[in-house]
Amino acid sequence: MGAGCERPDEYPAAVPLSDDFDGFLVDLDGVVWIGREPVPGSPEALAALLAAGKELVFVTNNPGREPAAYAERLAALGVVVGPERILTAGIAVARLAAAAAGEGGPVFVIGAPALKGLVKAEGARVVEVEEAPAAAAVVVSGHRDFDYAELLASKRALDAGAALFATSRDPTLPTPEGEWPGTGAVLAAVETAAGRRAEIAGKPERHLFELALAAIPGAERVAMVGDRLSSDVAGGHAAGLATILVLSGTSGEDGAGSEDLATADPQPDFVLPDLAALLR
Image (cartoon, rainbow, N blue to C red; front, side, top):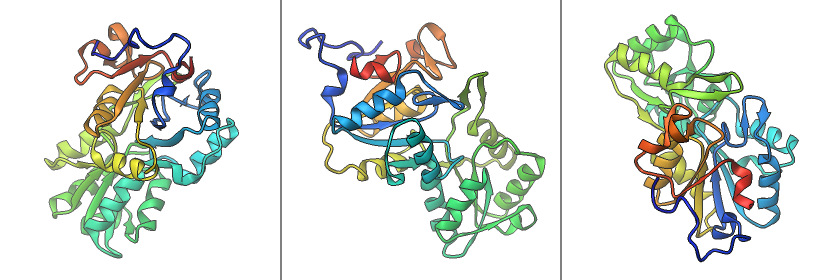
């Protein structure tokens, strides 16, 4: 385990880790909720952080909903934030793809309707499978309806010179039934078929972190809180942030979960059982 995973001796036991920071970037899947169920204690912890004046921005590689929908879901749990405080890899990838395609340029999107809406909002023209070979850019994100027709359409577009972007390389996402295939699994098929490698818009790359930090310019001591070593911890470390791993999602100790804390590089600065432990 890396340095900083346990509180130094000079900290009184009664002082929670949250007191060390005035801002947090918080992942959603595996940290706030798993599937449709909240992680026990997480909503209450987030409400307490807001009440204490902490700056919160939620950062997720999951573009399955638009920010307003995520804000509604959080509000239903008692966590009231505006949609501008919720940044998804979908927002970041939409901007990258629209810039590559140009105003009104054609973009083929493998992903949920919400992601297609974000790409349209950036001024691009989203095309379907039939028009995909003429696309200037291809965007890849995991969704349940991914099929061979989309794979073939993306290959034809990429063979013709389209730019390739993806929301993440996360191979799985946590659910109450265990880990399900994520964007990384879909992207692997596209990259293999086309012999191309995508530019990643979400964590651990810089794009999403830059957007998130710009949303809380007054916060000087900021930590990234997440459950995935390869995206949350690695990305937070690269962005120069303190990193807090919670063990409620995909990463665990002694090989628990799909990512192993013992072999992680970089190591998180702090390891907690869940988000609620920030305040204990």
